[in-house]
Length: 150
Image (cartoon, rainbow, N blue to C red; front, side):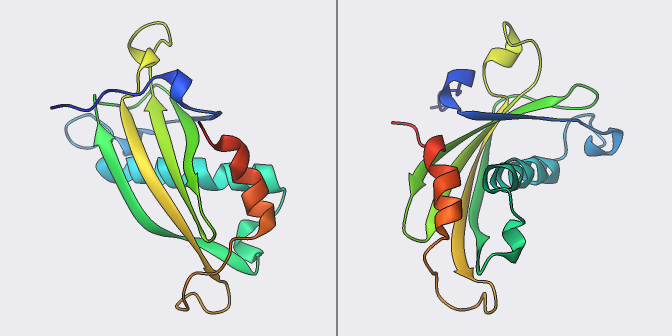
């Protein structure tokens, strides 16, 4: 059974990403690796803007522990992609995000997601990322909590 496609109402924060000619593969649709680049950009751009700081320089940093993507229809150059961001869970040392990718007329085919990613950050000590998870910085917690959906 095919999962239900998310709609724009399922997301809280928005960003537009410009597609590039090189993003398409030989078949004329967005390369799979590019979806993950967009997910990473959507999450980290939000963190930069919402915290007002370089999150790479914090004492605890978020490392990607898990990603996945559900593909519903093709995306590609030259139309921009709108990314919707929502948080499913904020834990002591982790955050679970969902990122919807939308392309096209919001009243038409762009009303439902073309793809949806799951992206999990686990916070670790910036000086020794191999150590076990550490509590996320309050600055980050304050930036992601407003993205939680009931």
